[in-house]
Image (cartoon, rainbow, N blue to C red; front, side, top):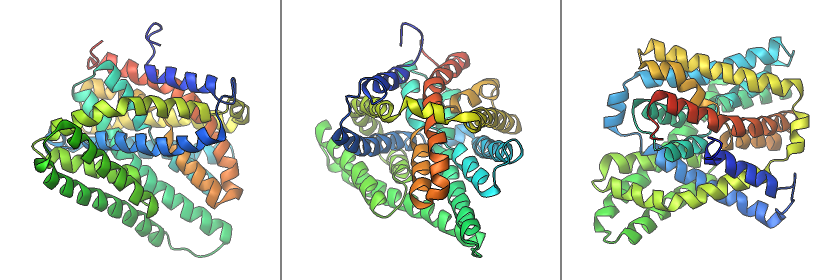
Length: 369
């Protein structure tokens, strides 16, 4: 991948596709089951790293404009996909809304890997990481609203949108609260830890315990560990040491995560994408770019953010796949239609997204390559 100027994460995905059922078929059912848990672990570490970017100092330097950018890029993608599904494809409103909600998600894992590979640092990188971290909660809330609306439409029952919104908001608040609690406890424990190995063990233990409890209580492990990482970064004097220990551990897990993600994707799914999938892939990218650009202009952000931030938001994987799977499990009549489209789109996004993110980082001047 380095030889042809593509990010390593694309190579990991391609390697996984080669190892998977589409070509060599070396993945056993046991490996697939293990991949689910490795994905939870890798995504939890990614969320912790993203949360560590949420320091008061960083947010002050970015300003309130980052909220405008995040809100507009997430809702822009959601709105354009929803309208395209209705007016171009004639889909029912509740199905279009669900596609639109999933479109808001971005893949933090791919972005983190590309940032790390390019050694990117600067205002553009800070803005990109902040937006990627914030837009998943937007996506979760939108999806909860879409699911509630779809359930109401299918069952023809009068379910209050306010109740659906309240349930969604409570889920976000509970997840952030659990992460903040664990972060506060870890900050109190850290001064008593003497060796780097113990620091790594305790931090990893809190990350995994938070993720496990979140899964047990049907909360978002991503939100829990974002809050945990943010608390440690803001309150601990040894925050840099903590982050160094986790970074020393997470790269092999990221490689496993992306390779196994590639192995779980069936190239045959691409034949199921059809015109509806093409519309989804194209309109989501348009929405992300237009929304991010509009937010950057409204907030008077740097010119590099105005020009290139939208390109860094193209990758989509874990969260979108997870939501599509939830739709398939909870509402099969809708989910069986949505799931193969999202899986197919993921193959495309994870192959073209990282190179676009790398291009944006290089053009912004933040990449050190």
